[in-house]
Length: 209
Image 1 (tube, rainbow, N blue to C red):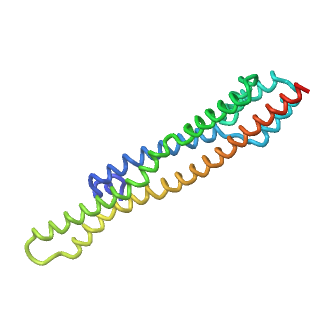
Image 2: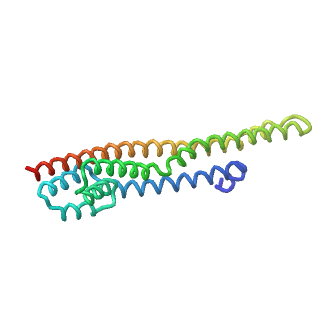
């Protein structure tokens, strides 16, 4: 049985599920690409930056935070670019940067969650419509009911439920995985923010001493 035959048997809801699944797949692929680009090893970056700040090498520190376009690099870049700002102002800046990065990571997940919720409903709708059509045909037919034909109609109607679940299950798994990545990122960003503020206060005390 070819793909187009399955689509025809499933009816209009099958095409709706296909369209929604394409949207969900696009979100998943874009998020995977973005997450791979925006993640870095926080321990390694903090250690390298801490060594440069300890040495007072501002030029090398500025170069380090521009080596990659990860979220943590962008957070540290904002801090290094405004290193002479007062600690309270720097803290507010870092909090703003953390919120901005979290927004970037959460982008598209609402749409993916919607795909995971809608596709099973579309599948159920297609199945119900298919069964209604089967029983309508049986009611309008004359003579004894053909059980083979009835079973065939119900089998075709159930295709949309299968299709809806086949799209929804991977969407739910991807959403959960993305959410776990966001939790890990949020922890690394807040820890990075604390690291920068601690270094700022330590360097400030050292300079005054």
